[in-house]
Image 1: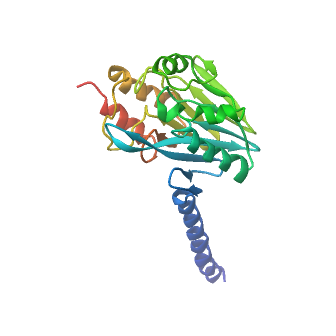
Image 2: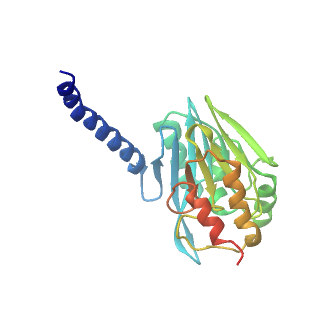
Image 3: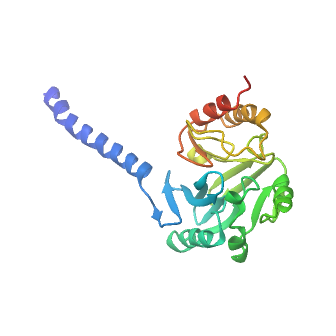
Length: 251
């Protein structure tokens, strides 16, 4: 009598497994918000990539990744969209559509694809943060400057969760940090991290001698990371850190 019962349960199990797989695929590939200037892609219930577009002389129109992490009624943004107008679009989506209070915006480094929309956040009374060197370099470059500085590590409470911002070493710039969400085992590497098969990209402010070593140190600093987001291109796993380390490895 037990054997027919087990057989009867198998199709049900397969059906539930299929539903689970479809649900995971839906979260991974769906779009939470889309316009001509901004896309928001869910990675989990609380973590999202925001994508805006920067027009450059050397590389044309470039898609730039940032991070939104929400927990409870709060949200933190890592890297602004490329300008104030698109940043206001992102702020509206978080505050009105998601009904979250943005408690902070954090710059990964001093370039425009990280700080170009800071003024929109400042006008809303949202405090901004960056590595102390980011403030110095942004001011020298004539870019928008974060309001608050930290030196090595900044841990922010977000609802019942947290996000950790840390300077691990030089690479794309002298000031680039990474941000880690323990809840989702998610690492936002910004432009320090390359998508698989990417070129070396813009090197005007880079430390190419340290870049590979920094990528290795990031992987060691966050051994539990499962999701890795580059500054540009497709997210993946820790293979992005391995690829970046190999790309800039000295011959």
